[in-house]
View 1: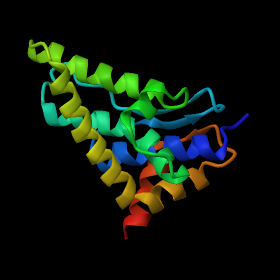
View 2 (view 1 turned 135 degrees about the horizontal axis):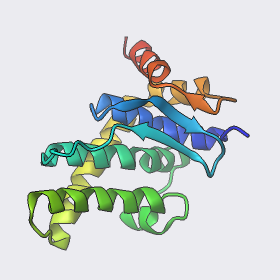
View 3 (view 1 turned 60 degrees about the horizontal axis):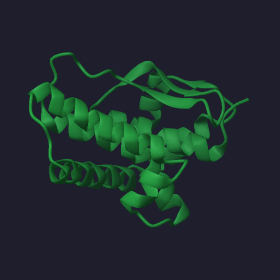
Length: 164
């Protein structure tokens, strides 16, 4: 059973952000087996990566899906919605985990204020990405209809076509 329109849209936002923010997609692209089994195959964090900018952009990719959905539905854009919503909670927690990995790699502990500031930066980047690439998100989601796999090559071709 393929994923629903809303799940495809959510995952398309992650995929478009991964490409546009230069994080990268694995060739598997989007896996859309069902609403509960859908994800985007984003390039893994390099073992030697310690750049804060890269980690912030990676979090922005994680937040792009929920923020795109909030925007589509006219929901308030508040951290509490992401933190406590059953639909968005995992992306929020994964974002915190990515930032935790950054702080582990640089050998420092992070204060709550530092994490909040990084989440805010990532959220702004994600929202700007979603707004500027709305047509690509819609096009990727539509092209993936009735598909359980949508490759990186297909995703990138659609994004490039929308950017012309």
